[in-house]
Amino acid sequence: MADGDSVLVIGSGGRESAIAWLLSKSKGVGQIFTAPGNPGTQLLGKNVNISPDDFVALVDFALKERIDLVVTGSESQLGKGIVDAFQKQDITIYGPNLKLAQIEVDKIYGKEVMNNAGIVTPQCWMFQDAEAAKAKIMEDPKNTVVKHPSGDMGGKGVHPCATQKEAIGEVDKMLQISETVVIEQFAGEKGVIHEEASCMAICSGTSYIPLIFSQDHKKEGEGDTGSNTGGMGAYVPCEITLGYEKWILDKIVEPTLKVLDGKLYGTLYIALIRNPGNEEWPFQVLEYNARFGDPELQPIATLLDAPNFYQILKASAQQEDLSNYELKWHPGSAVCTVMANKGYPRKDDFYKTHLKKTILGLDDPYFNNPWVTVFHAGTGINEKSEFIINGGRALNIVARGKDIIEAQQRCLEAISKVKCDGLRYRRDIGYRDIERFKARTGD
Image 1 (cartoon, rainbow, N blue to C red):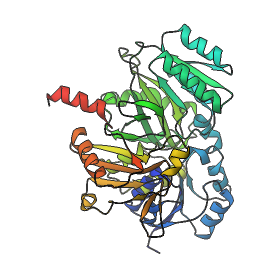
Image 2 (cartoon, one colour; image 1 turned 60 degrees about the vertical axis):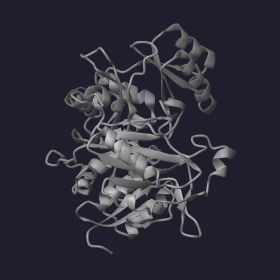
Image 3 (cartoon, rainbow, N blue to C red; image 1 turned 180 degrees about the vertical axis):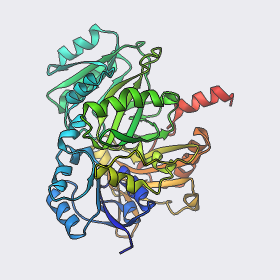
Image 4 (cartoon, rainbow, N blue to C red; image 1 turned 90 degrees about the vertical axis):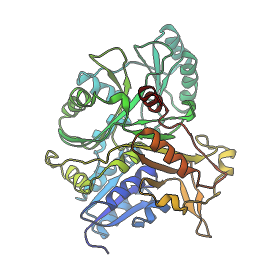
């Protein structure tokens, strides 16, 4: 075993790949285990064939291997009390306990926290009857958000809608999988896309370290069309938050941590929506999450120049003050594009026909460039030791550049080297900031 601490990362997606990748670059880390991991995390350490939901086996493994820090990636396990399970055995784990994870799991509780913190958030109503929900949408011309009230939705439980027609369609979809639907409405010009942004911070009580703000693309189609997904790409930095960073931290992050009585140890993720024309409150809050975003963390990770990433996560897990820590960043922009199963986000027969298809080209010399990083997610290995599609979102291709245009171009160039007829992707990740960049520079 390499000298240094042993770390266990729990999960198998692109986010967990990025966490393991950052830990591999951190001082003080010796062995990285990932359970169950993917072909990418295997290159960074050792995969362990244990389900993320098998808390007993995970705890036993951590005790046997004398793990110094556990990092869990997914909201699914947080909402089932994984942190509590490890803490009962005095194992250091990064993330909020079950009580604090409710800010993500229970959207109504999250709304109560926002209200108690004095944070402006869209007004909401709960419905079990589809016609009543649709009537509410039709009676008010404001922009509508359709939400799942609670539980693990894999990042697909919040649907901002630009039109009443779109919102009505989302009500029908939501009530097929839930007994209750939440309708939120916020002020703004009807039919205008109110852009979203993500704010994440590593927290320890009331002390915290913010990450670069990001914007992700939830819709499956270019131009943000089609069905919602877990995320088809993301980019950093996010221009709509530039100049508002301190305001967001002062007015949203810090009041939230105070209302939580300084007991949040882990990641605070805040989903923001732009409130144009209102400089007193330029952003409203859509929801809280209690973990790193996926795919938002992936481009953030490549801009992060932080050999102390491990020390910061461990300090949070040990409930230490983070005031003496800071993160350093590379200049420029980063774009992450998700290469997904052609059937994603549906899991029908068409989706299944693309599983096990071979992915070639990741050994192309272009991937040796320092500005390109590949994070595996839903991939596997076949009997010929070739990469294959093994899920929905298979690969996260990330590229850095001096600006958003160069980052996107490099990302698409890297994707062109990947050969697989079972994958699709969006070519327009970051398009809004690219349009603004071109308008500003005259390019």
